[in-house]
Length: 292
Image (cartoon, rainbow, N blue to C red; front, side, top):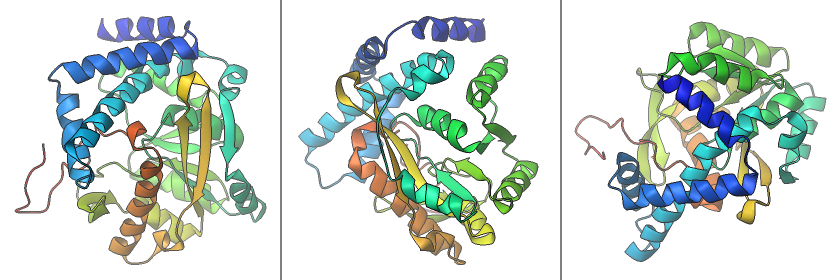
């Protein structure tokens, strides 16, 4: 029943304009702000830890703005999953930095798109899958009944989803070795002992080693990419940012440091649109204080 209700709600949201979606999303974010939710707690914890130099008033303003953007992110899913390609691609008001991607493609290099949870990351996936036949890893949702809808929505423009398993990793290596393009979310806790600690906003964060390993072994070009949500529902500004070469360093900790530095640089351009509600620092080194 929950899955059916979710599908119907997403279809209903897809009937709205982008402006109406964002207005309702901001109102939902206000509700997140007013109620003592887990989302508000995690967001508050992350913002206060990551921006200790801001005074409390400024921190509070950032937390409230971020919860509004979180509401927009949630309600955008309906339009992004059900609108047609022409309508979705028309949402991009500006695109910056893609020439460097085209240069890498002309050199027949594989390309890794590192898409942090910043702005509208679902829309980023739509654009990349249309332009570059993207291969990306996928973890099934808790509501397994939603899986067919999610897969169909994300693959409909040419993306190919592979499992978050050893077999999926092998497919990523294969695609890059053939000069293809893959997408990876670079700012999640990898879990399962498959990461290293590296600074993120000055704090030790358990960070993935997969992306640097892919880049090192395939000589793929790496670009951070994010879709900035513009004010007044004016569309999105898509940013492509080349990663530092040492993201492919043989030392896993050095590579992870450059990976996190790249994500952080993107986030600092619009911190109110980052997914601060995610428990980025949930894995702690032995003896370290628990954040959440």
